[in-house]
Image (cartoon, rainbow, N blue to C red; front, side, top):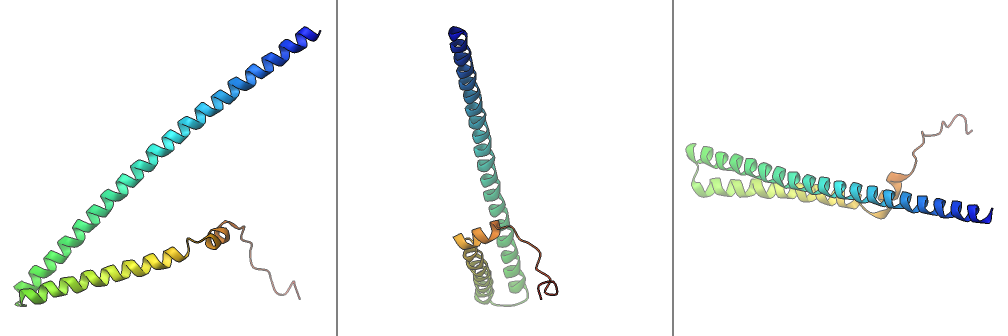
Length: 125
């Protein structure tokens, strides 16, 4: 009886170890797949940034050409392009500052809290 109980305990322990190994292998696979997906997302984001930058530069160049064709001096056209780039950079900086404030710990806790519907003032009178 004691021997069979000991064998059963060994079997349960072996099954538990096999289950833990399977779980760790699955966790490793999921982590690897997540990492590959993350790298792909970063690569696509960089490509998107490059394409948007090229589009912006083409628009600025077209604006410069149009201004020069309309008779504006080249220096004024280039200054206009610089001002447009400065305004765009200012808008991006302002947007970044606004978003950066919301990334703090308090903002994260607020975002994770369960939000309930506002209480009806008539029922709490």
